[in-house]
Each structure stands twice: as structure tokens, then as C-alpha cells.
Image (cartoon, rainbow, N blue to C red):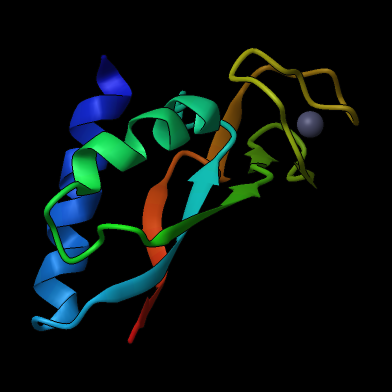
Length: 110
Ligand SMILES: [Zn+2]
């Protein structure tokens, strides 16, 4: 499962940043175009954090609405998928500004 390796990576980043302290909560930002399923992240959170500094921590996932720019007319809009067309000129030459990312936004330690 794709999300499993992502979560293992997230746990590693958090442990590196927690400096040996127990983690209380982790806030992740997941872009809607990242292709990551938040439910799947939550599903593997517990097994990935067992025995780590994140054991028992709360997982908070913020979904980020993507922003894209149309290269045809310069309009900036929110797209739900890669194949969305520009609402202004109906063009398909769009560039993703953000919404593909997954990042650790906040880490709360005890
Ligand atoms: Zn356009």
C-alpha cells in the first residue's frame, strides 16, 4: 500500500523533529491532487506509530484544496483533478500551483 510507506516516512520525519520527546499530535496537510487517501493514512497510523515517539498521538489531517493557473488566459482557480479545464477559457493548458503535496504542518510534543 502506497500510504503505508508515506506514513512510515511521516513517522520518521516526526521522530527526527521530536528530539526524543513524546509526540501528542501530528497535523498533516494533504493536497487533493496528491493522490493520497486520508482514510488510508489514518488506517495505518496506529500500526506505523507503535513503539515510536508517536505511539498514542493524535493524527490531524487538513485537506488542501488545489490551486491551478491557466496558461492560456492566466486565470487562477481551484481544480479537483488534473483533467479539469479552465472555467474562463475552457483551455486545458493548466499548471498546478499547489495541491499535490503532503507535508507535516505541525508537531505537538509533550
Ligand atoms: Zn483559461
